[in-house]
Image 1 (cartoon, one colour):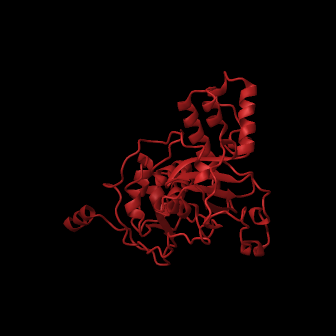
Image 2: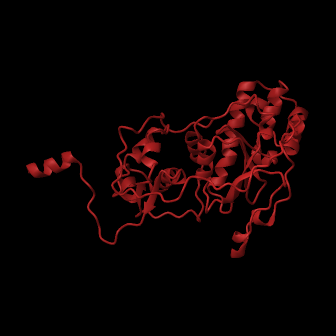
Image 3: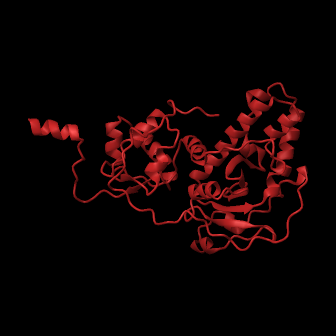
Amino acid sequence: MPQSSGEPQSTESEAEPSNGEKPDEASDKPVPEGEEPGAQKSAAKPEDWWRPTQPAPDWAKPSASPAATEVDPPKESGAADVYFCGRTILFSLNRALQAIAKEKLTGSLRAFWDQEPIDLLARDGEIVFVTTRDPDLYCSETPTVLANVDVVIVDRGRDQQRETGAPFFLTLAREESIDRQPAMELMQNYGQRLFSQLWVAPRVWIMFEKNADLLSDAADVSGAPNVDDWALETLRLVQNLDQHVSFDPTSIPAYTKDGFERVQKLKLTSDEAQFASQFNGVRSVQQIAKNLRLDLKSARLTLFRFLALEIVECWPASTATKPERKSALQRLIRVGR
């Protein structure tokens, strides 16, 4: 797994609730897409546990035409039980992950973008792994653990990933070509790397299909119980923000309705905890960076993690300059002078 800077720690004693907190009016409850099918699907065979990827539909490709945003996603199968779907500009990745966790969903979250679709498998609200049918997109390099494995065996595992979607690390572990523990770590690492690209992708359509059969061949893989911590780990892998990700150094971060409660439960690094402790509904991003002696690029990356998780939202600076709120100790010192 990728190592984050600093030791994870709680922000319960550092973060303070914001007086500038704004109610988050958008509902976290996903809207079901139709009725659940009455007929039960037959158990999938191991080699058929993943349906073949269909050719990318028109709405999955970038388009300069505004009308493309109005196209409804086609159903891949008449029997598919789609629980929610939509573009991430309207239904964010965070809300999708929160829905999976809160509703304890089992199935696949499929993300369509300008490359091969990415699939996140969940079981009872826990994230099992992330994969794609393009093994080169999944892992284009050769990890050290594969150095002593026959190239033919590795290529066979990659070919199986193209056919079934099963991560080739998992296939190699089941064949005992590599040890299981490093295989599970690599599968989590490369799955999170893959998913991290979706946070900054400009056009993504997501669709969650409830289907327990998709997990029939993943019973030996444990899931990540905390979705917020898992998502934060993927956000730490984002090192460059594209131009389409807006950033205003004068904007003021403020906690969302449940942001302050959620941030106290996150396993933050020391740098992230210090950054979160600066949110008070008055300080601008620029002021926070100055207080912590950060350059704006580092401040932007850290802020993006909290924004993507919808823990904070940024509000434009007021036309009138507001004095920064002073602590009780600072006020007493001033009165004593």
